[in-house]
Length: 210
Image (cartoon, rainbow, N blue to C red; front, side, top):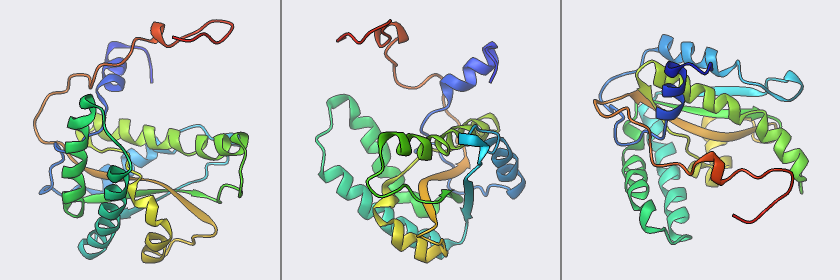
C-alpha cells in the first residue's frame, strides 16, 4: 500500500464491518477470487505461503458454523467485563452472532501445520505472523471493492468440531480466523474509533511507562 491519500484513506477506513453487511445480496465468486489474489501477496516466513482459504456458502453448513460461533461468543462475553466505550462494539458483535448464518459467504482462513505444543513466543510469532498479514490484505481488498468483513475468532472454541464439519484435517491444518463477507450497505466511510496517536505509544531506545 502506497502512502498516497487514496492509500491512506483505505487503510484508515477499513475496519470491522458487522451491522453494515448486506445479508440479502450474494457475493460473486470472481470478486472473492480477486480479493484472495490480493491476500496471497502477503509476506510469510521464508515465503512458505501457508495460507488456505475455505469459502462456505451452503446455508445448512453456515447455520451449523453459526451455532458453534454463538456458543463461543457467549462464552467470550461471560468471561469479561467490558468498559463503557466497548459497549457499541459488543452490541454490533451480538448482531453479527445472531445473523452470521445469513451472511452470503464465510471465509475460513487456515494455516498449514499446527503450532508446537508449549510453543515459545518465537514459534508463535512465526506461525501466526505468517498468516495474519494475509487476513489483513483480504480485508483491505474487500473494502476497496465495496465489500466488507471483520476478523472473527469465536468459532475457534470449537475448532475441532468445525474441522470435522468442513473436512479440514485438524492435525495438519490450523484454523486462524473466519471472515463473514458481504457487500456493504450505505453508510459512512469515515475512519473508525479514535486511535491513540503513534507519538503517545512510541518509545525511543528503552522502555518507559506511558
